[in-house]
Length: 145
Image (cartoon, rainbow, N blue to C red; front, side, top):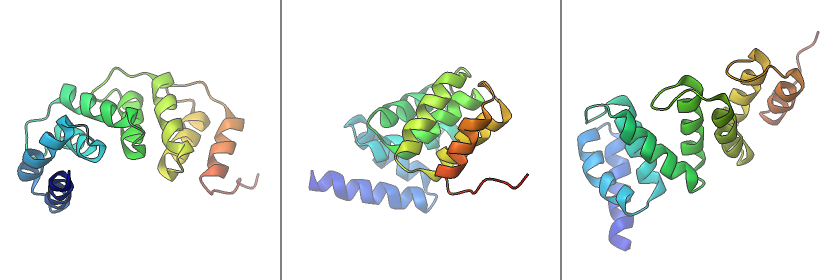
């Protein structure tokens, strides 16, 4: 396992340095072993064609696998896939489900996205009260009317 930890650190460093083909080479092996951070980064690379030809199916597979482990950024990413219909069929209910999981872990971006979704009624029913609650949890004070 210590080798896996070193590999994960090396893979993340390659990813952050934008050496995506090297990052994918390292991280894909760890993703197969069940490492959520590796799965999340593999999803990003496959989704955006970084160091590899874009592969929406692989992107969705790795994002969902990492999200199911409780990885907040992957839950947020999966929510976006469902909200935008990117790598997945557009599905407002699934988007809300995954954004909520990430938001409940304190991910401000997910809290804000939920608030905007409820405010705008985009892919889900408009709900001003839920929008206000999520904006509040994200740290935004209610606007003066």
